[in-house]
Length: 446
Image 1: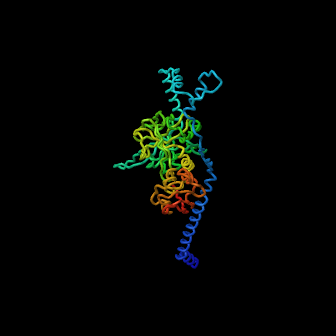
Image 2 (image 1 turned 60 degrees about the vertical axis):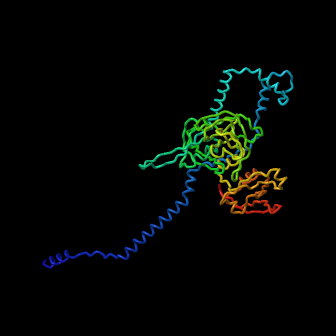
Image 3 (image 1 turned 90 degrees about the vertical axis):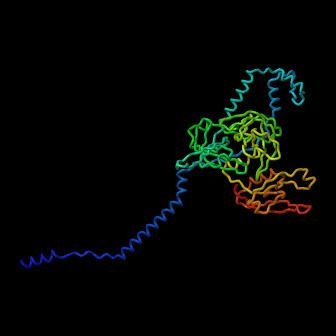
């Protein structure tokens, strides 16, 4: 029994020793676990980044926007044509032969005018009709606000809003797009569009034509209230190339007086001809409408078509031409049509940095200057300068397009793709003759 007690006493005193820790092995396992975790995380991240756009596109497929086109329009109806149409409808005719307006003498016209009796009611009806027309136009006019954030002395955030008038010219199935003068919005960080019914929506820049100072600003159709697109109008682009445009009746809308919603009625008082800027040109149209010192907006004809973009900066004063200060001046829409199509569709314009003018028949006949686009100015550090083009060169071919004048050059440039090398053929004077030079040039994005 004593032996049993001794055995139990000895048994209870035994101690179970823990297995010794292999620190090196533990460290290796820890490092291996961390390394494997890093590898797994890297692979997972790379896989996510690779497939996320595809998955996102699959889950959030958005309809591709339609390409917007602005077809050329024929010359507009002239005032005398409108008069002839009016007479044919309203003047009693004793014979079956139509009236030949060109055969009317001043006495005949005075006799026709003497039959009209104008009074205050007539004037009220006329201005009421004009007001109704402006109300129709304003459904396509928007106010674009450029928002800039600044910090004051007390670290408070202040918002500054610069405004520019815009006109809706396209619905591509995904966006409503307006064009506007870019200068008032050039410092903005974000944009908003306010429609004629005071509906305000977040907007963004679709494209910028820096050479002509025009921007395309868009809003997503999905951001608009249901049925809203039926409440706005898309304005059509008309023609500013009509031969008899001087004297043509127009209306200025947007901010011609420097205030949103202001309006002016008048006519085209003068056309200064073509104004050349790098890689572009436009016709400068002056109206007899008195405007603000720095207006912007658009001029419409009476067929609800935009025929000019009001310019309120130094472009409204063209050196060498007599223009009346304080009147609304606009860039003709015809020459800008191709540039507008580019920015509305979000397509980069090719930029070479060349200002050209037409070679006149007199210069061709008396000075033997070849017909083409005559280079008058080059922008420093432009592709044209780097390629070796000089002032005084005459551009006669761009890619496969023959160049006979400055407009041909601008039109051909719109067909080029930034980053793709092309060939320009020029004639350069060497003594008393011009020699042909072929130049390789790669346009950049405007």
